[in-house]
Image (cartoon, rainbow, N blue to C red; front, side, top):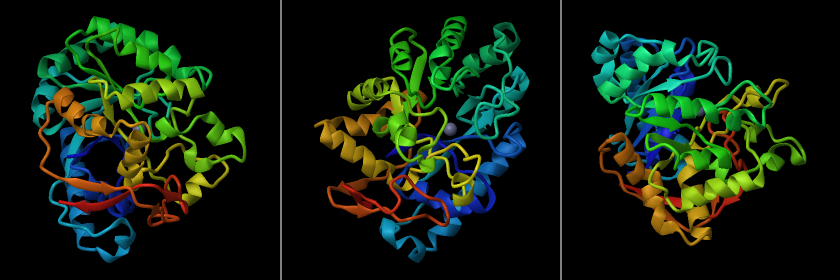
Length: 345
Ligand SMILES: [Zn+2]
């Protein structure tokens, strides 16, 4: 039951085009709420979930278009685990919406795609009623942890805020999303209530791959890929399947012209090749036995979720990554990767 614990499915035509790619090989995914406008009410959340289910169901009938990723079985087993966009919510509202959501996602204001309405200053007392209510109701807080400092230092600088959140709200589960630095990996052992997701691209690339030679817009994302030693630190806890670490692709589709343009949008699109790449990485390091924990079991125990059964068979066989999936360019577009999805049951 592969789980993608950080996924952008967008909305409208983009959702209809790419939702099925995640639903094919994943049992479920934590769905990010940074739409325009962001998901902030129960009505918006329920309606968005329904649009996702519709998009996945609709496209499931349309098998031919995606021949190159393998045969579709039925897509029944895909659970969108919904999130709200963090703002100060009162307990009454949270109690009412708790059954419909899995987590709340906090963005610092303006730090990434569609995050303008996020948190401006991290005043613990201002946030206390909301965060205490979330802790009581067992709603985890997912955090995009970057300051507005120098781009390479933003995540490391945010560790003070994680410290403050984790120690002020010791019963709140806090997930450091898409961590990219060794500083973040060290935080995991500092607070019992801190967890993390790691993307597949941050296990593979460093900043050199983005801007060290010709600029690669399709590898440009937030947080930006860091130094080789940061990647090594991420690899270590991922390959060991550290029990507080989960896979979250942060797969973030943008139309090709928004990536290959002056003012390139941030986001790497990996959803259709994430599992294959993870197999390749874990196999290369002799750690395939830990992949199940990294991509499913850890998330199930951290979030307390029981996804529907889905068994994905991967084989060490070359897969030619398409140039694009309905106008969205994936990582490794036009290249060959070492593993393929053989079957999904
Ligand atoms: Zn994201």
